[in-house]
Length: 402
Image (cartoon, rainbow, N blue to C red):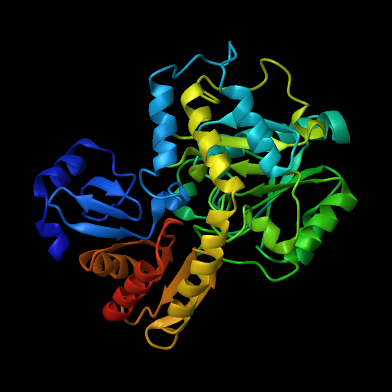
C-alpha cells in the first residue's frame, strides 16, 4: 500500500464499488483544477503531466474556453442536426481553414471520428475509385490505437483492447509501423485508405523514421489511396506544430481530430477533408444527435482561435525542447530511452528498477501525475500552458524516484 492509498478512502471505495473496472486509475480523487495544476479532495496539489491524454492541451479551465462555454450555456445547447444553429458554420469554416481543407464533419468522440473516416474512405473507394462492392481494404499499423469500438479493435494488436471482443470486422491489413516497404507490399487494387497516427501515443510515443510519411504520401498519391492522419492525440499544438504531420511536410487527404478540440470541456471531434472525399456522403448516410451541437461548436471555435495565433504551437516547441533535454539527461541513470516531439514524451524506465505503474505511483506521491503504458514506459504530456519551472520540477521528481 502506498501513501496515496491512505487518502480519500471513501471516494475511492465508492468508485470501486459502483463502476465497471474498465480503468485502473491512480488512487487520487481530483476536485478542482486550474492551468497545469489539479487539487484533490484533501487539498493536495498535483502537476498534471497527462492533460487528459491531450484533451487538455490548453490547460484546465482556460479562460477563453470557459467564457465561450458559459456564454453558450445561457443561450442554446442542442438542436440536433435536424436544424441549423448560429454557431455551426462559424466552427466548421474556422476548422476547415485551420486544416486547409474544404469540408468538416463534426462528431463527438475520437472513436466516432475514426469510424466516420473509415465509412467515408470505404464509400469513396466504391463510388470514386471503383473498388468492387464489399472489397474495400484499409491498411493500418501494428501497435496502433484509434479507439475501442468493435470495428476499431478489429485491427488493434493490443490484446487488452482486442481479446474476447470478436467476431471482428474484416477489411483491414496490419503492417509494421514505420516500415515503408511493408506498407507498399500491402497496398493493392482494393486499398481505399492508409490510416496512421503521425506519432503512436498509446504504443509509447513512437516517432517513425525520418522520411517515412513523405514516402507514405507519395505511395498513396501514386496508388490513388487516401492518406488518413489520426491526429486526435498528436494534433492541435501538442508536438510544436498545429498538426504532427507538418514535421514531415506532408498533407494528408483526411484529418481525424478530437480531444483538444473540445478544450477539456465537452467532447468534440471532427473529420476534415476536401469536397472530393467528404462529398460522397449524402443525407441519412451518417450522423450524430450531439455532433456539432451549439455548445461544442462554441467551444471548438474558441479552440480554433487560440490555435490561429500560433502561441501554443510555439510554447510546445520551445518548452518541449526543454522537457526533452531534461529527460535525455536521465538516460543511463535509470532511463533507457526517450522519444517524442514537442510537449509529448515516452520514457522507458529501466525495468530492473520498477514498472511503469510503480513509476507513476511514485511520481503521484511526489505531486506529479503521469500515465504508464506497456511495461516500464511512462507518457508525459503536460498542458501547453506549463511553465519552464514546472517542467524542471517534474523532471526533478522523475530523477528523484529513479
